[in-house]
Image (cartoon, rainbow, N blue to C red):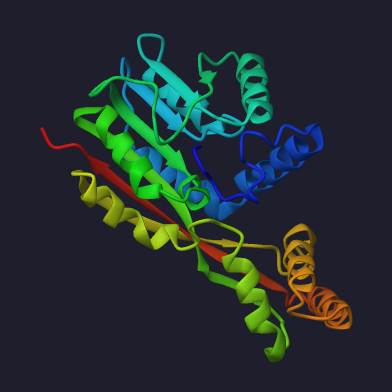
Length: 272
């Protein structure tokens, strides 16, 4: 994607294999979350890709949803995943080949889709807009390549809905600051319908689901990422970080750990 958040590991120049491995692991963990699975199923049902249609998955990651689109459009259709990160693109291609899927993957830019006007029937874009500094421009590009009557599904997170518990009151502002800094557009979820209508599309469905984590297991990759960021910004001390870890560990032992965030979805079409 053009000009994503500078610190985003999804930025195309981040080709370090270790970074790719971490991205793949994170995406696989997210894909297994019941909330993600429910919202994806909800969105696919309403997007309703049909045999013979042409579909694009913008920011396709490991390619799981490109494969879903490929199965829906069948051998007479075409499903392409657009993924700027070469490591993720390679993984997506390997997984599709292993699954016998006709999904194909190409590099490209969400702000300059390599397609002519009115070329596509279906566009899917999941948890990409939060990483862009110009998400409205990316949605306008998706609208441009849709044929009249074509449909688009946008799914994205709203980081203002992030909840971590238990957290001492004096640490909450620091963690909130770091959470908001994890994305270029942290409130992407609540803005989906506005971007769609601004691009001239008609919104048909709006949905949401909460991504809840296991209350008996601390989600350490997320927790450590936030705490490390807060210490690096001098928002909390190392002692406060260690106290946070201890509190969360004790809560998990009692089944009282809580981590959640809300993801939103919007389905729209280009008027005929």
